[in-house]
Amino acid sequence: MTERDQTAMRTLIRLTVTAAASLLLTMSGNAPGNADPVGVTAHCTGSGCAGKSPASTGCDHHARTVRRSTEIGPLVELRYSSTCRAAWVRVTHARGGDRIEARNKGGACRRKSCYAATVAPGRSSAYTAMVNDKGIKAWGCLHRRNGNVLCTEAY
Image (cartoon, rainbow, N blue to C red; front, side, top):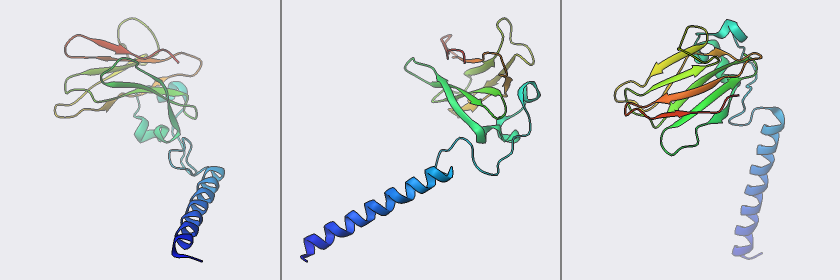
């Protein structure tokens, strides 16, 4: 076997091993980015999550992005945990002073139906507390300091 053939064979073996490992991880439920990690328990459900942090309750481990803003600029994401039946808003590429809201009812931002967070000075991301999303639609908005508003569709 020539040196070129040996190199090709080693490359083929590496690709085969990598593909097999990825398949096994995916089948076992432990693939990177899996929305439902094994052994992580959420500490609230539905209205019991309202006003709580997705990180401190474990709901962020069971979450996925269900809606995104479509405009160019900061990325506004509506995150949802099917285990917790709750939603929250995460923003990236924003500016300090920008304000985000997670809502499940219209009107003024009131406790249990709307939670807001402000991007800290010198930061570009933030997330809100959770709103109940059990049998209710939720959505999120970013209120920019310049007056522009970016929102997700409801989920």
